[in-house]
Image 1 (tube, rainbow, N blue to C red):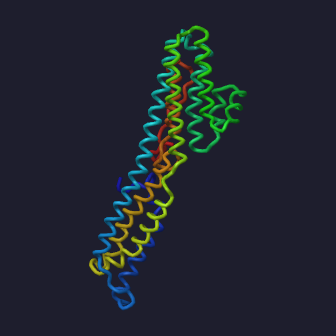
Image 2: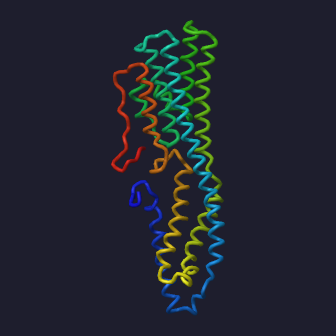
Image 3: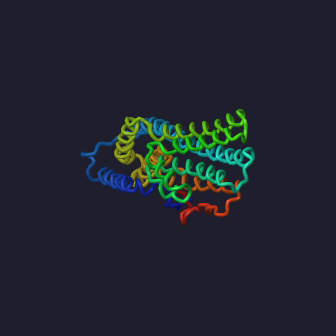
Length: 296
């Protein structure tokens, strides 16, 4: 783990760290060759500022990780609801597993997962829907602003149709609709996380304070640690800048950066669970990590 490159945030902060190293060299040179132009700075204020800055960085990191954790729990809950829906359809409707209505219901549930993934990533779901639903329905879904919501409407229409056919009573219909309500809550919660980032003022203040502190740090350390200033200042700057970069990635957990949620893999897992419930012949392969052990 010490030498891991892919998946870390080091590539994002290399330039600031290099500048900090140069400032450390400048501080060492100035302390011996131009001391009158660079007055000695007491390191005590830097310690106090560092503690305050660490508390503020921790607050933002906790807020961003809270968003990541909630998103993870929402997608896990969605997979549970999808499996429950599949079990309901295969056991309580009285239809055989290979019935076209059952197949369509499973494909609609998979379409909900895929359209939610694409909506959260602002991508086109056409390719994910084309092999699962008929062309007219795909075009109807693509015309909607909130595509997952329309898929839920189609699922609800199917559940109501089965109820009217006498396949189950009011109580079971209500139970099935509650599963769709839970999926609607997942949709709304994911949209809330995606559409309401942390206040921009937090990011600006933390960014300016961190970089200003790291720029002045070598001049505060050189009087006490001398030639070790470039190395020690880079190490301290790495801690603060890496925390900041990690928080920036986790703030939007639905993106495609290395530390974001693997929505594509989770969507395929959900579809696999649905299709295995009905013993479908063509089940997509599980998404495996790439050569850098990352899932998308």
